[in-house]
Image (cartoon, rainbow, N blue to C red; front, side, top):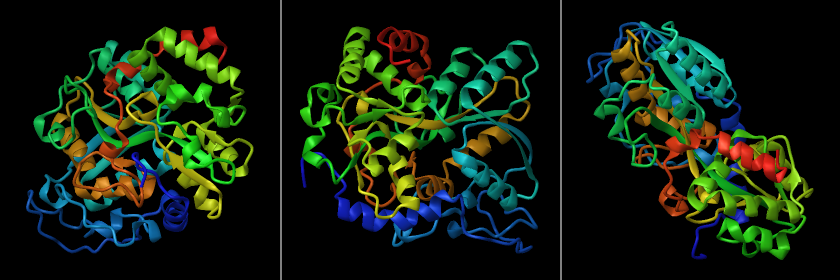
Length: 393
């Protein structure tokens, strides 16, 4: 094995293709209300609730076969969810996040989640506007990215999360002031076409890409995509604006092709339109969900913005009258069952160490992400100005 961990094509394709199809369909195991009363060590299972097990939260297919039992705290050891909760859901992985909410409603018949889905940045601005006007309707903001969480936290309209929510999550994946906590992670990666490139063609350092001959005219990116903007913001924070501008210009001069989003970028890699691209790690799995024989694999840079691990996370909105229920809900998202759900249905990185990532994915520690405060990724305007100056936007 090379110094940095890679998936071999054989291992990746063999273990991922069918599992990706099962997981990304948004399906978890079917279940029916049992009507039976079960015992909950955390306060007693609600009478009439569905007697759900781990399999109801776990995806299916070869990718999740023979997975170890997840560690961490089980939902059965947490307080019951009782009452109505308003959840502003930014993003949501094509409905998968809402599927988890509905599972919780089935488990707890006295729990009623009012979910408002919309783009994460739109909801962040709505929450700030509502809160400043004294009319906030959100109890919880659950966003697909830390940028939107930071916008709301920076506006001073969140409450500090208690230790029981923050403690299970490692440093770096929660706000230093306790305003939000990550519940699922996504790593920046380099999907590459294995018919066109080999692992040795992909540098360990993202700053070497503009000078790598094998990547000239072969790279693709999606600069209008939110995840890419967060990546560039991380580079600006780590390396400074001038070096970031030089990198962007270098990639333009190197003949990088633009795509509308990172799923299409990854598909273009699999099609052989380009040799490699910049994308979140799970898009290669989504390609393989419908194209099991696609010649695509993943590479990771090391310790730089190209190795950024961003998070989906939650925060509780200031002024809510449901703070206890909101805290219990967030704690449920960090339970063993919910973390297994994120890992096996969305292929995200679990946020608690006791739950492993899916299949051949390297762990977060093996990825060696950069040291950057994810809360600062909300400072987008300087990044957008920089990208416009270069002509990327």
